[in-house]
Amino acid sequence: DIQMTQSPSTLSASVGDRVTITCRASQSISSWLAWYQQKPGKAPKLLIYKASSLESGVPSRFSGSGSGTEFTLTISSLQPDDFATYYCQQYNSYSLTWTFGQGTKVEIK
Amino acid sequence: QVQLQESGPGLVKPSQTLSLTCTVSGGSISSGSYYWSWIRQPAGKGLEWIGRIYTSGSTNYNPSLKSRVTISVDTSKNQFSLKLSSVTAADTAVYYCARDKCNNSGCTRAFDIWGQGTMVTVSS
Image (cartoon, rainbow over all chains, first blue to last red):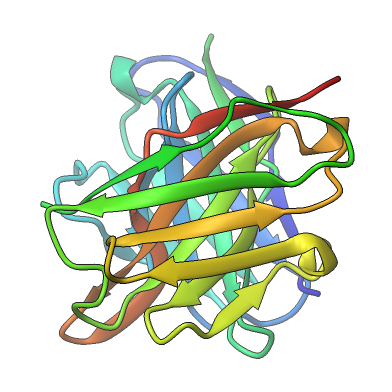
């Protein structure tokens, strides 16, 4: 199985800060990497798919990069609505299975 | 606009089988080449993919749950279902159904449409 390591687990930041979250895969997953935002009591919301493609309707301050084993989600200027938990998710094209990272909670500093 | 809605018992006794249904509205479950998945989340914890089904009926499951999971589809009712057998307290979670995002370029292996989730508690 491919393991996903997401870091940090918690991040304290201020409005306007540039924020970066990292996800590492234990082996190459090509670009089968997605990022989600989740708020309490709500279903996750897709932000980025295929490592760097911005989902329709998602603000352009969100961006994704990487391929192979290392991926990043960047929020260029943190807004009040962005305080939430973020998850990466990988797809293993060999075993046809999905795995999520452990999550990163973005808190108000 | 396709929407998903989970339904099923909110309380299941230990050792019994958890059964949930996801109803697809706003579109046909058979249209397009979509995969339909179940995902769960214990309170305060992360997300765990359970398994998926294609409209043809082919399935893939999380290896850690494979021995206990069955996912099926009923195209006549526009629904797909989850059965998880021999449940324990560790299976207590919010259960989501979700759809793989697909477009003219193919499927992205990301979930763009989610149900609101349904809480299932395993307790006697």
